[in-house]
Amino acid sequence: MDHAVTEESFDSLTSYWADARNRLQWSSVFVLPAWMKVWWQEFGAGADLYLRAVRRGEQIIGLAPLLVKEGEASIIGSEDVCDYLDFVILPGMEQGFFGTLLDDLKQNGISQLDLRPVRPDSTVLTALADIARNRGHEVVCQDIAVSVGIDLPATWDEYLATLDKKQRHEVRRKLRRLQETEGVDYHCYEVGRRETGELMDTFLKLFALSREDKANFMTARMESFFRSLAAAMAEIGLLRFGVIKLGTLPASMVMAFDYDHSMYVYNSAYDPQYSSLSVGLLCKVFSLRDSIEKGKKQVDFLKGDEPYKYHIGGREVRLYRCQVRIR
Image 1 (cartoon, rainbow, N blue to C red):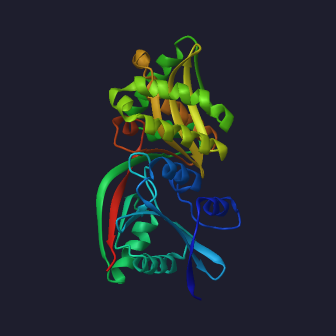
Image 2: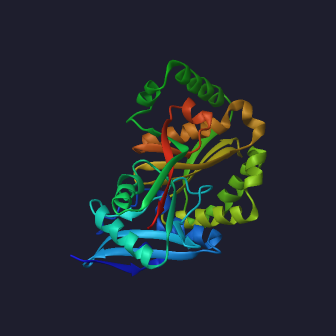
Image 3: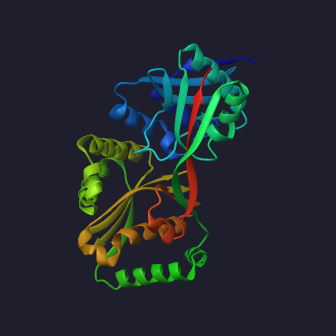
């Protein structure tokens, strides 16, 4: 059966994601239409959209959410706010999808794909790289970063048992010291769109206090992105804020997304005046324990090799850049 390529919009991608009948593999929160639309609205100036579906008869077998600059295409997103990316494909249809896509890219004058960051289990590395090479295209993939996550057991005690003796002792010691402090409370907020404003205000205030580099990162444009992203993720029920309070005062927060049995711990913030109580680390530990209690399969601490991720049992996944020169 022949394959066809159709031009799409963010609205049509959203309808495909919402349709429970299609089995397209939306592999992470970073490739959801709501996320990509917010990114495009904030950072897409100067590029052209290339939103395409590949169809086999009436069936959509994959989506290519790309942007194009000067003949080079990349997946919508950027390394500073999108931890890893991929195409959206019906499992088992990679050969037909990528073969058709490569032909369409060439016909549209696109001579190169620059795809980053991607995981080892992405369709970019498990399928596209070999398909492109077999069609005579030049493919170069290189290790560029690391992501860290934890596969969750069924109980908190089982999680503690996975840590080495020193890690387990430190987690328990820090938890005990914090919980001995009067008025300590942790709560994970499942946030609706109308409730995001106040929580985002608090989060951004703590974010700027946390470290100088975080304050410098949060430019006016980046703040606009964070606020728009929070609203969009709340709209589809994925936004979570984990908050440690001491009395009535927020001491530490994590901004996270609950998607497909995983908790994505996207960013964090804390008030340095409480650093002696390890509130920054422990907010992540509480989020981890809360995820176990809710039956999640993984906590993903995402890109970066910060030591705390390893201190609480994180395991590395390498991230790659894959470039395809279309001959």
